[in-house]
Image 1 (cartoon, rainbow, N blue to C red):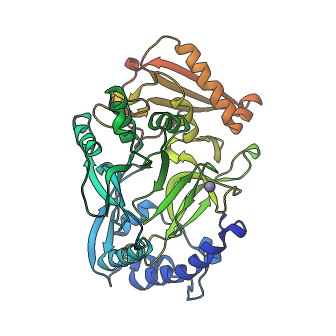
Image 2 (cartoon, rainbow, N blue to C red; image 1 turned 90 degrees about the vertical axis):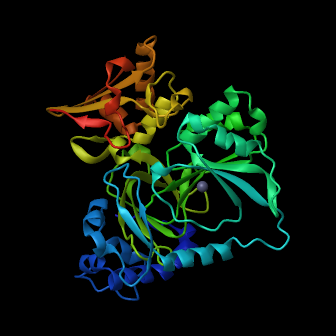
Image 3 (cartoon, protein in one colour; image 1 turned 45 degrees about the vertical axis):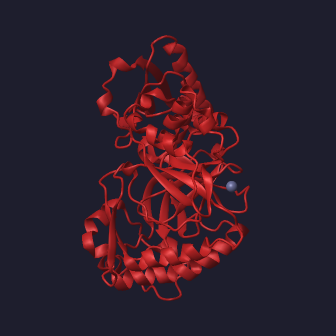
Length: 451
Ligand SMILES: [Zn+2]
């Protein structure tokens, strides 16, 4: 099942994709033994188009990892090897060529060329985070300052950048945009507010959040503290050049034209409307050349919504490892991981594994500590969720609140429970009664099947 091209709104991208897809496929077949072998029983020529894409096999991370150098184009000059973060399994190493770097630099230099009298370049502060894989550098029409922030001990560095006036030719005198993960921005925001540095927040007009899911509660918290600021959110994978940008008008993501997104596999309750699917991405040549990525399987679930915007809208439903599936029909999504995150971010005193040293001080920082158990007894499913809390008062009421919100927002869960086909319980316990070290959510599943 492919959910591509659901109407008029894809016309421009389809033309772009139809032009680059044959080049993408030809490059992969001609220059890599892996794709040549994968497509050996097909005749894929210059007439390859978007409609042919869903007929090709899906490539998993494990296939790519095992393929070793056979998935690397031999006709190009390797300029860099980038690692993925490995947050959803073993990290893989991606070869990037001098040719694709040169193309990207030339393409974006032209695309972002500033008109003659366009004024000063904005000054952007980028908070680096080496834990999220390596990205391809792109020429931008801004001046970038970089600071590390993976521990509260380093907070003085971004603060110093925010506090300074700059005297650089053709560049704005103050930082007006900040780029970082949501954890970094939560920590920075909390620190600025708590330590009386609100004047440093005044000149900021844009915040770009990357690499992590941003819940509505967390977004609202940031908006309230930064005031007159536009918060943007990017979805990306290290394997692919490009990504998708969150759109507040449709509450979904719009993919960059350099990526072809597809959704496959999952079902959802009819009440949900549009089907859910696992995201499959194709990275287009010549933006990706040395390590072709064609129909590559992500770990993320999205839903393609009828566009309220002029472009297809992909709503994020969470990671597959964080999502509860029906044990009697493993293609049925019962409780999406993102919905659980949303509800826990609306709940006070949820215990978390800090994402970096000192981050516990800031709200929403760190992964919530949860344990989910799935059992089947005859035709009855049992879903039991334990949520660790920092305080034990009101834990019974908080557990009921979480349970009610999840039932309200997950139609499939609600249907199974109300028809007597499933039992669902939420228990809140003190954090001391669970072992924190086992709760690195990025590498584990929330839901474990028990007999
Ligand atoms: Zn939109």
